[in-house]
Image (cartoon, rainbow, N blue to C red; front, side, top):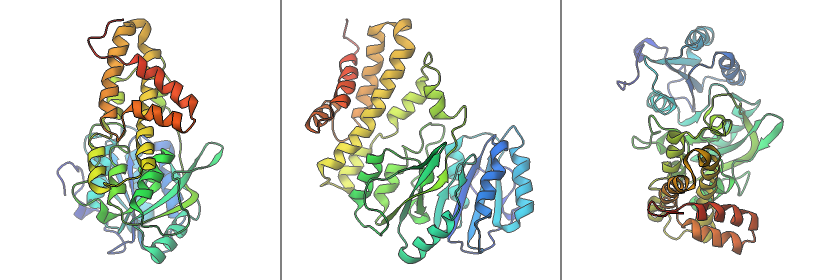
Length: 357
């Protein structure tokens, strides 16, 4: 057991009911008492054999989440295992700990405030048994919209084109790890979530995709995604007068080094693939620029805002195949004039440190 997993020793936790489960559903838990039981019940209600293990990790919750986890373990027995962090380590560390104790051939991360939709497990098992893909991709629903696609590409059959997998996920701009069920062996010992950082899915999912040799996309919502107050995305957008330097910096650094790895793994990538990867970060750069301008131009003035935005520009476009100026040209070539205008505004605004208005 890794030293950062505190609390009970694994020997005192019921082992998975099946010595080699086909699936581990990994659920990090932190202060989600109102939603936790619904999350677990949505899984247990779909179990029809002993081949699925549910692993909970309480990351030092300060509400009743740990007690609910313990009640769930007592109620469902060997189908559910519980581990404890004795101090709060954050989502990335919790997911890493869960990876270390998972027994399943496939890994499915699920957030503890979300839930599985009916028939998801049965459909996943059919795909795993018939095709055994390295990655299975599914869609999700939220609020009143029944399906949010997470992939742009071939549906409903086994695929072996790694570049198409990377291109399809970047084109959809859906990096959530919980919409991608993967073989445990893809993670190895060298792919983990970055502890203490936000936007951990963006910092992991693209690397996971490059390790897959096969995939299967199901254009159906298998996960219900709940947007809670206080989540990373809601905190970025709900307070226009605030600009969180740490969160935005983590977003800007999440794809660091990816362009180099892409050249190694897929040296002959098509221009379309490179475009979608760069567009993904170009849109995030534009969003950072909008948040920065709203929050700080009155307080700091345009020269300061320009310098700050320039640093984000340098950091982000160094992680993708094209510069953002090249991306702007791609927008024009594809007749995406609105995207070109928005990107150009923030490219013009971003200036180096020695620039004076």
